Image (tube, helix red, strand yellow):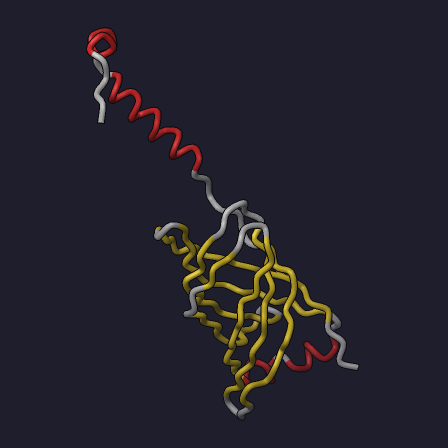
Length: 162
């Protein structure tokens, strides 16, 4: 590797440090916080196991990545609430590679507490709209650097039983 010429070194004794500092500033400025994923829809809802105390559901949740760069989603740990009542827990331990500016699906397996569903069953029967709330954490990253990110997602879902 060539060194700085003696003339430049004489005129600018801190040139290497200045260039290194400018490079680090440029690098830090180019890294920006990823935007939140946009919820699109839930599809392929299936009952996997039916029981008196617990029931297992599977659903594919579709999101959109608005970022101009891809990300890696390592795991999700989430509590699911319907009309502010605890419904169950959703966990994902699979690594998902998310493309930039693209939709992606998260396969969710939710264990539902039947007693909480029965408590709010009449309320859900008479309402045409339910409030779904997801609270939890996820690990996302890029280039081997991962960060645990908390999330609190809320949406209203139209239902029609009759």
